[in-house]
Image (cartoon, rainbow, N blue to C red; front, side, top):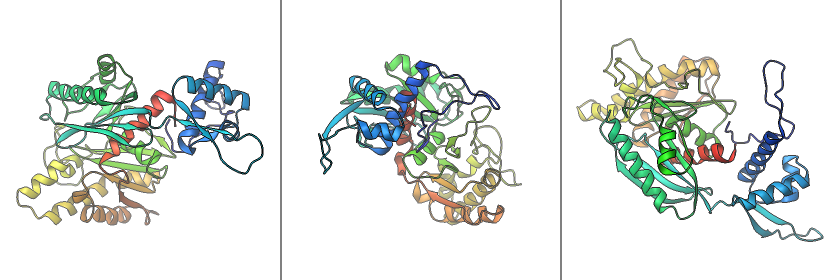
Length: 382
């Protein structure tokens, strides 16, 4: 599981039940140690083999063997010697090949287009593309647009691509099956396997709000107890507690968009119900109501109140410390965010200081989260 500082010591075992410890096989231990080295380098930066052994708790021999293997695999590079006042031979520094390893990130959550980018492990965007978003419910059109975007980005990537990370709205299982995405028209679609077969590189697929939450926590400094509300064509939530991404029994943890809010019936939602949070707060809904002549401040204030109604029980039950909003700042920041903060604090107990803030990752939160998704899925970097 991805966490910002979740470096596991070498003695850590996986729980096998109440009071039980799972057996650790030699192959598992080596894989764990390999991930441990990569995770340490990712978060702490270049260091010598000796320092890497000290930080990870591994022996110098084990560390040296692993680094040699990772250099041979093209994942780690030597960066020259460290200059300093220490006596003896200067230490050789090693680090992840941050500029030589790249990820293709795809974001299907925007209200107008599918967005994609080639991003290296240093966080630099190498190339950026977008294609128009097909009409809602056009399943084949959505797939065709996604294939077009992914293929174009893979063709322009100048260096080694570790994989393709996809953030998409809907209920998505851990193995990349989109069980339900009404806006895209996808139901029980094995998207990860389809794209892996077609593109010839590893592909990982997750809910866009979950991917955004990973980016906020791993790269953006969010606390380990946070709800990220992703607002675009729909409204979704990515939920972390104690640094762990919550998925729920059906993979639908954090799916606040189709929670009905308020006693009034409300507008009809794409899911078939009336009064869902998404029908009040999606970007399309906000823009349509304003375009139809409703007072802009009233629309945003109403959406902020309904957001607070939806998330107050979550904040109270899970004792969350912050809510992060991801989406167009011109609509979400200001009146909507301030109203949500005030009402959320009024509707919860002992949460007078709960924060509602905008994402630190801006418009690229899902694209950057796709990098985290690939780092975890392909390298075990947590």
